[in-house]
Length: 147
Image (cartoon, rainbow, N blue to C red):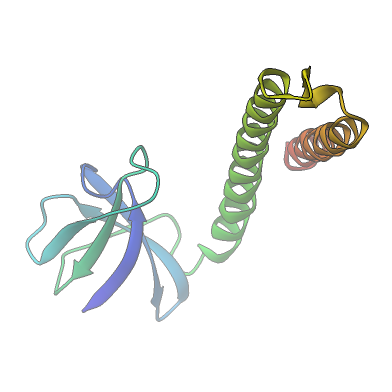
């Protein structure tokens, strides 16, 4: 019996790839999405577009996928690529929040002027832009490094 507490898109997957320890070492196995002994339970998340599930494997039939014991290196590579993708996604979210903050500062009035015109707000906006652009450059560099 095995449990995977958070699995992305597992509620609708027809085929599930599972990383598991075998006698030869870390190995990948494919499991049919409707296999006997596989239990899927949807989980709530902050992002409703990202479907999460808890998977329970109880004597589930699995087919080896790839070379037995050869999953450590591909898994490490996949985790690096996934972290780069998620980091880039977060930079995009930060840029959108920066744009929304600027739009609000342009709309919000104080002393008859938009608060975006005050020097302290200009400095804050410049700092946020620098942070976002640094993240974007970092994302480009990471993509170049991993190919």
